[in-house]
Length: 153
Image (cartoon, rainbow, N blue to C red; front, side):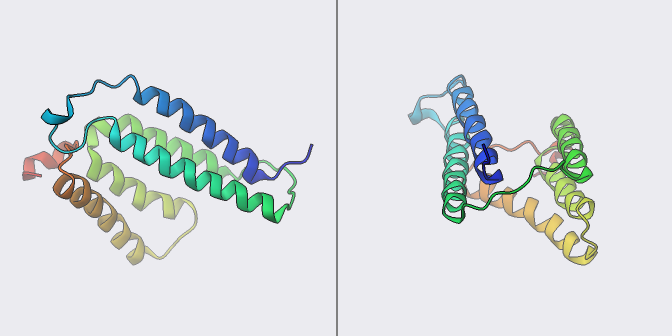
């Protein structure tokens, strides 16, 4: 059977989304009247809904195109990306969100071959700053800031 790579990848993403949705049912939840900001289950579920919706869109587009591709081994950068993201995940509680996102935004483009360092630097600073402003200031969520807590963030 010859399936599009988007169908295969989409099926894996949808299965992972379903498992992660189930994981959110195990989170402790506060009564809605007592919660400051967003309850612990809402943000992960919102992200999972958006992710699953975009995946379904990708799969539908793949069915319309109906192009088949041959399977090849992924490039070495895929494994290196997994190692980088796993390392950042392990160090997340030490680094905090801003520094972890800075590291990912600075290292991934270089790993995948981009050499426009000024643009990468702006990207690596602006993405964590935007995430901090949106989630911490606008939505009122508590974010782990790691060593930057000494700066009063």
